[in-house]
Length: 157
Image 1 (tube, rainbow, N blue to C red):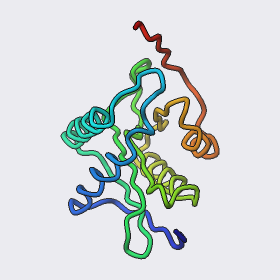
Image 2 (cartoon, helix red, strand yellow; image 1 turned 45 degrees about the vertical axis):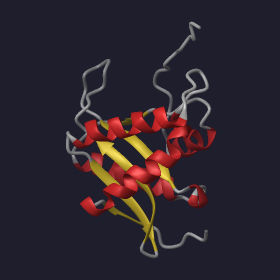
Image 3 (cartoon, rainbow, N blue to C red; image 1 turned 180 degrees about the vertical axis):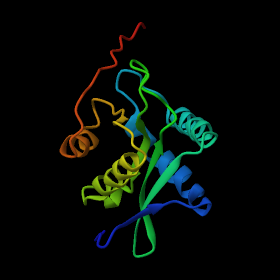
């Protein structure tokens, strides 16, 4: 897919079905090898996350090109940092159409979220990514994100 003239804007209620669809199609990229899960359970967890986040009035940034959706970023700022209690922006979920990946769309979505957070006077923006999602980690690292803490997991079975 040739991606030119990507526009990032605030989503409208019409975009909700797309958020559900693309999120469900890409949800397995958020699953760690430490905690394997069946696709339908990962999709259910994604749907529950959307229900919770949408009950808190998030901001959704949509990436479009030629009138077609190619990705989104789900932004929240109602979750303070769990260690310091400081206000922060948080990327609850970001997804780009698989056919449109590695063309700068994730970078543009992040830039829009960061600018929005700056406009609200927030001191930081955070997100989580699995260790195995090297493509996403590359996007985040290139945008200046660094590891602040790690979630360690030990399978008990």
